[in-house]
Amino acid sequence: MKSRFYLARKGLFRVFHLALAAWFAALAVVPAYAAAEYSFAVVPQFERRKVFAIWQPIVDELQKRSGVKLKLTTTLTVVEYGQQMRKGAYDFVFTNPYYVLKFYPIQGYQPLVRDAKNLRGIVVVRKDSPIQRPEDLQGKTVAVPTLNAFGASLMVQADLANQFQVKVAVKDAKTHTSAYFQTINGLVDAAGGVQKTLQEQEPAVRDALRVVYTTGELPSHPLAAHPRVPKKVQDKIRAAFLAMAEDPAMKPLLDKVPMQKAVAARMDDYLPAAKLGLDRYWVEE
Image (cartoon, rainbow, N blue to C red; front, side, top):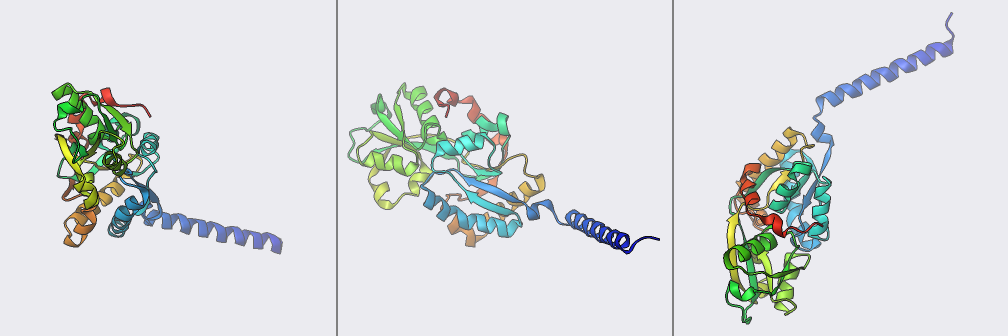
């Protein structure tokens, strides 16, 4: 005859196995993305507090609309951001377009959404600067948000060299805002930036600067996803972002990016930039 201890132990095992089976059955019903949390990393075009002030409400809204848990993150510098992206540290990135191209063979980030309005690099000087033309920049020091900034550094250097045979010395200012302030304060001759970040500065900053050159245009910063993120999760984030862009109530949020008209993006949008020889100006970080 079986002992009462044996029967009790057999009963406990049966309860355990039934509970385990129920747990696995629940996992089969609940989508994987409902439990997972995905990092959402934004390139630090501005100082950290401003990045979070702009992007946290957007990320909160994306999370609500998509049902996908997201955690906003950034770094102190663009260089550090690029290093982390090269490692594949982030699930979703809002990033320098050239980072997507440069790191695609390594990590395979796929563009999901971008602004329909293309990006243009600019060179700005103080309003009272004697620099009037691109040719006047020969040998001058230009502050840039990072040496590998797409519009503000790579496109600017390539355009000045190809079109005007002008070579400049670039200085890493860490952020767009810092590059503009260094120019205003006379620490450098000029700053490389993009039209969108100049528009985001305080009126006093914009009014103290003058644009002396504007580059050609290329597709703007994309929101991209690492290939490890399930396709259905990527699709939900893309759909949620595009739906936000169609909602007039969301316009004040997206204008701060600025993402004035969001459209679906794909890798083919960025391939023409690979033909511009921007690698000549890329600095390994």
